[in-house]
Amino acid sequence: MRELQKLICYMAILCLAVVACSTGSSGQASNCTVDYYVSTHGDYSSATGAFDAPFKTIGKAQSVIRNSSNRTTCNINVNINDGIYMLSAPLTFESNDSAGNNNKITYKAINKGKVFISGGAAVDGFSSIGNNKYQATVSNVSDNLMPRQFYVDGQRGIRARSNYSELGAYGIESYFIRESNGYLYDNFLTPPLNLTNPNLIEAVTVTQWKMMRCPIESIVPSAGSDLLVMQNPCWNNANTYPSPWNFQLLSWLE
Image (cartoon, rainbow, N blue to C red; front, side, top):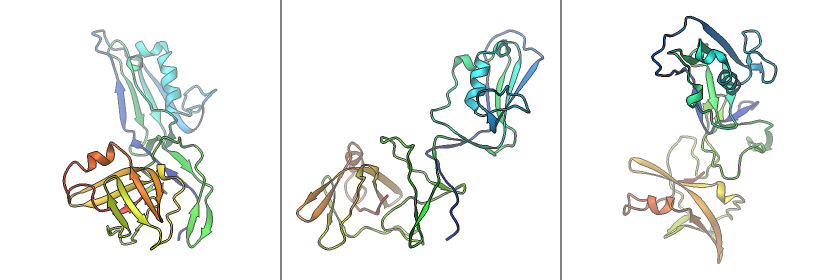
């Protein structure tokens, strides 16, 4: 197994090309142009946005432009250097991000395809737990979020799952018996589930032409068995159609 140095989890990745904002004013566009620069190596508090003193975040450039008189008198370019720009909140553009007098405000990557905006969380500090397995603590993800994307060295990885095949084949979890509200797991025949965070687990089915997934609401012990109660309205919606087109067979837990 290759050495794991740093893994980055992206819940959402956007490659920024060009974002332009302008008004529909009938005034004459000016001939002046103002350039700002953004870099992951920049400074958030004291930077001016100049080439040799770039802003650290796109949001900082946005804030400066909103309060600048140049917004209505000049064309403005926000030149974004290569890098991954992590967001703690969505990056939104509103009416006060528009230019005036037919000018334009343009956000653009200096090198096309090399700027990434992510709402994810960086995950590092992995330690070996043996058998080619590693673990790390993720402390900056809210309890009500369900992260579904996991990237390793820029490539989407496979989250922890049951019934995983190195060949990528889609099998069936044969130890789970389907019930009206979920799946029953017999602890007498197989090792106990020992799932400590059922609210972070999804059941996945791959059947016919589709893949469906539903979160687990709770795990209810019952006479040597564990009942995986599925979350609604997802479960009811996934079972609108009759078998075998509904959420019938469990392919894996993720």
